[in-house]
Image (cartoon, rainbow, N blue to C red; front, side, top):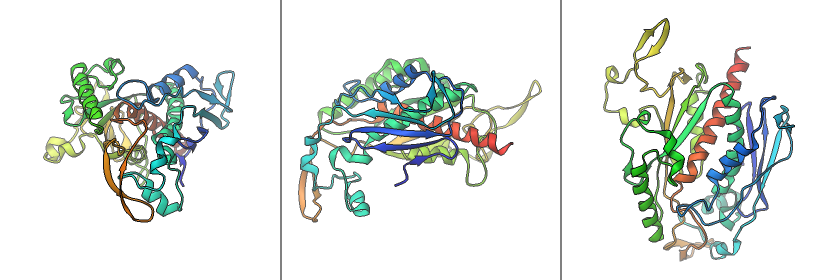
Length: 358
């Protein structure tokens, strides 16, 4: 398995949903960064289960324990090891799935590839693995804060309910004031009602998380195979249930001509500036100093609490009715994960840029 992310700033993660712990080793993290452990805990709280009626009922404190690489609250430049202990597994809930392939899960592909799988909560394929990403992403955010980079993600669509204005027209201060994490309070209420209705039916629903990166330096990203938007796409599509990635105007601009889509340059008091930002802050695979914005599509959670036809390991047709505690919609908890992966990518490419200019 490839369990390491990054080039200079790297995260190697370990652990399974119902194992003893989730953890990781971060390498290449700059020395001298003050580590705000309370901030890391807050980021984990945004991802943790059981935070509202819209998420799985699994109750985990998700308390991180740092093992190395931090001395007197400051990063030393050495590898940062950390662990988050699992405390609330209900492994028996998955006994009826031990020899059965759940529709649209990793059960079949893991079994075919490795000849063995951990059926308890999905094992390594579980979204609980993303704890390690959020810890590493929180540290990356602290490092990026030193250079003025701010990363904000939010739920922009649930099922058919979607924001219809440019992100700049919304108050990002509203995002954490509702359990859906949508910057439009009224639409957030409608989204919440939809998720709860779908949950009551034993079903699930998907949608879109949008992300805005402000303050990114010019020059991050490298031609030809190291383009920044390609790296962001790779990071986002590695998240559980992610199905699509677009940046800038993306697919929404396919009906425009080049003259309508181009971002025009002009001189603003001696500084080169852009009149629009349809490119989403990246041109030629390299950041241009404008806001970077992108969208990540997430499918409905594959585990539905209703009967579905499937087969067992021997190929016999059977019927599965899932049990256990599952999210009816992944979006609210995916928001901090999208931010974390964006932060890890940006820090890695910032360090790559510094190395390439020596």
